[in-house]
Length: 113
Length: 114
Image: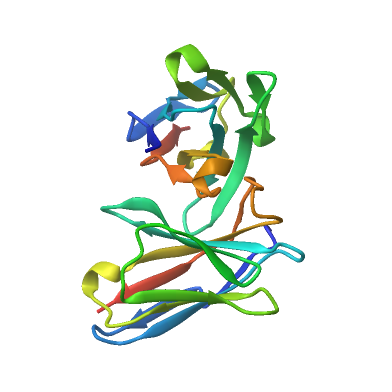
């Protein structure tokens, strides 16, 4: 158990809908990362937050957004969903910004139908 | 831009045989290198990491990896594979200058023959 909790574990939704994925980092970790794992793109970095502020952006679509709350949990919002958004979404956390050992949650599997 | 190449998509070995999974990276400075394992339906578990120092690093579950700067490689090895090692293995590279985000290889799926 990495200590990173992601909910829900599975999500099935229709095209055009909006969903929210939640991540609770390890206790004390300030930095949260979101990754997308899909069959065609592999594991790709989406976005990083550190202590409530956006720190780095990767290949994140404009239809996607994220935030980190004062209690350090993070949410990834996916809107106007398309079939191609079906993927496993991972959250990872690190203690500090600049700490490269990341601990991953078990992921949320999103299926868009 | 940093990149990671895992040239083997699938590997099958017999239980008890030795294993080597290949990883090559491209990065301008000294990278931080990682191996993660993903079992079916599970998240990513860190096997081992290299930041600096001794180029042969030991990890969990009997795995080790060797950083070879001249070859830009960080191959994962295990002397005797167990059936429970069947999983997908990902090599990743990161650094402080990249904002600590990890760049992953495409993964190698390991099957173990009884």
